Length: 191
Image (tube, rainbow, N blue to C red):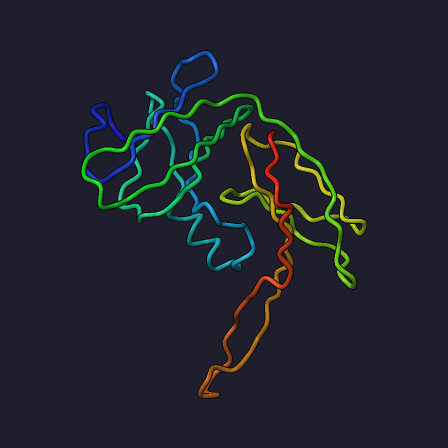
């Protein structure tokens, strides 16, 4: 679903992606995720639904249109071979008309840090909220992201526990997951 040349559609978001020099970013991958999305924290089933339905590509003019998006807060990322960019949007699907969003892509940055692991936990996942970036810490809690888009990013450390249990009528076994440990630093990192 590319936007076409007019970008005039009701109840949708039109995104224009530009390179650092201002030229359109043609055929760049674009991902839109709920602001509180954490890769792997909800399990593979949720990740595959998000991955399948929220990935786009810009047209030759660096534009893309998101249709049938529910109200909510989202992170939009444009990603090319050596450039990345993000924008955040608070979208209300009751608005009529076109919501326009501009996004510039630049050279990515790197972030490393350390999570102070709770007793008995040997490693946790560290994810960037609203994006597809996740790494595991080493046994001392150290982690590193080698390539992140520039901007304000919120990183969360968590342990995903996949457990099996019976449903409430004891008829069948169902799988569910939960986040056992969710450590939030309380500050946002600028990349």
